[in-house]
Amino acid sequence: MKRHSLLVASLLMLAILGPATAQEARPYKEGPVREVTFVRIKPGQFNNYMKFLDGPYKANMEAMKKAGLITGYTVYRAQPRTPQDADLVLAVTFANMAALDRSDETDAVMAKTMGSMDQREKGAMDRESMREILGTQLLRELDLK
Image 1 (tube, rainbow, N blue to C red):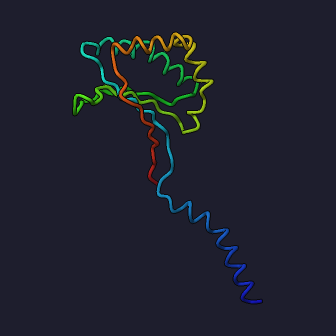
Image 2 (tube, rainbow, N blue to C red; image 1 turned 90 degrees about the horizontal axis):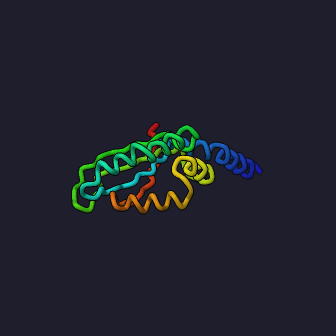
């Protein structure tokens, strides 16, 4: 009986202390999420593409920020290592992964700033003459404790 009581007490302590110990073992906490898009500007189109970024793109990003859909955005000029590398990087910051699931709200803001879905798709096709999207990556920041 004493052995049985000791076993039950041990299991209870593991049940109570186990989750707390597991949480303490992680030396970081999950932070914001960034969507990073790698762009290669076509020859002679840098200023034209920058005008788009400073106009409709910026207006859309500011509206998304005001609506609380994103926390920030940044445009970086990159030095390509090879002819296949990006020379411009667009980064959009979200508070967390859940913020990416607000597509209805995002569509509503984009409709106001960039027009209907058909207009946005046409605009994206028109921008193909200025740039090529090489890919997009999601990055989650890990804040060290």
